[in-house]
Amino acid sequence: MPVSEAVISALIDLKRSDDEGLVAQLTSQLRSLIATGRLGKGRVLPSSRRLASDLGVSRNTVTYAFEQLAAEGYLEASHGRRPVVMVDGGERIRGAGAGTPGVRFGKPRLSPWASRLKQSDWPMSYQAPLRPLRPGHGDFREFPNEVWARCLRRSAVRAAKRELGPVNRTRLREALAHYLATSRGVRATADQIMILPSAQAALTLIAAVVVTAGDDVWVEDPGYPGAAAAFRASGARLTGMRLDEQGMRQVAGLAAPTLIFMTPSHQHPTGRLMSLARRTAFLSLSRPGKTWIVEDDYDGEFHYDSRPVPALQGLDAHGRVFYVGTFSKAMTSDIRLGYLVVPPQLVGIMEIAQRHIGLIAASHIQEALAEFIADGHFLAHLRRMRRLYHARRDHLVGGLQRHLGELLSVEVPAGGIQLVARLKRGHADQPAVKRLIEAGVETRALSSLSLDRPRDHGLLLGFAAWRENEITTAVRTMASCF
Image 1: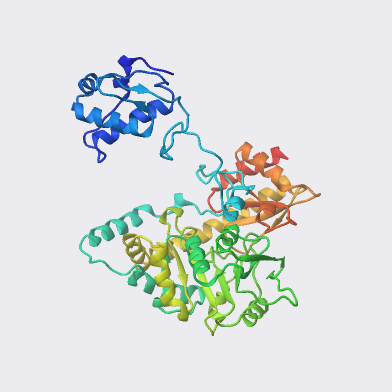
Image 2: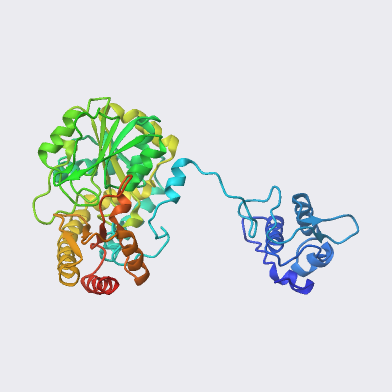
């Protein structure tokens, strides 16, 4: 609503302690009042002397603000006359900043890659609060935050005394090399390990270094959409490889690609385990220096029904496999740390690329995590969460079979933090997902994880982040939606 002259100064709040100067603050706030229509076209503003007196600032401060807005086309100002507003609220001003409230812009031209992201049928915002049974999350409420806080505090204190060190902190790399060797069978020196802000950052870095526009890349179908997004951004031609009970299948007669992406320990999203014979076959297909394999072990810490299968990377004797992992599933997503084990011959160029792209994790968090691992807290937390998540998986499976057994066929994974429930009777999954989200249960359509034409319909349901009473309530809500 338009405001009277007497109210104009009351709508302006100048902070003298702000890093932004008084002229910049006044200019920005007056621009906002004009752009939102509160100071309409033709409106005469107070004189510089009057406004300066009302605001308790110098007259020069107001004069400079008026002159800047006149230069941008918002005001008409001339010597001896009070400034006049020259535009309607919401009217686009030549040279106006993108953050100016009320300014209208035309439809932006996006890259093909970004256009595909916008067309995604995933109905939830990344800013939406976490709701049952969103997949892909562990339970942050069970994390030992007091212990982690002590590690962070000690690291922050030491950081003040440390000289600038390497981007990938030595202590954490050494701790990870030992952990991965003993728990996942990964064969790597500490120098081969890179610390990154996330597993997705690792995929972005790999794509930037080894994928050229037009290169062929194989991905699982259905599979992890973040991998497809990273490789498409590099201009790769993606081929979706179908699955069977042993995981990703090879296609006879199809020439080896530049890169193969897979999740062999827990296939995303089905949770299937790739057999040893299938792993060996893919390794035989890849050619050192020509065809790379990216192994994403996104939740490899969680196995319930059998001993964990060693990583594919540990079977590779020729430096063909990138191994990607993350701490966001095992600890908490707020940690924002992932890691990448790099083939030895690529270590140098990957470190250069990491710096140029800016995929650098905070050093004090790296040091805190190294301490958290070295003191045994990480393994203790993992042991506890394995028991907890195992029980939650079984609780969700039992609830789905009792309440929705006629509609859903549940695939029980041997590990991981989520499961697939396929829809029976030819039901489509995306309308079901939208109904569930409206009812407060957040799931993901299996068909949305297909590369091209959806062949699978089902629900991807997370169980790790939810307590048993929350799972029970969510399953009952699901039953009422079908």
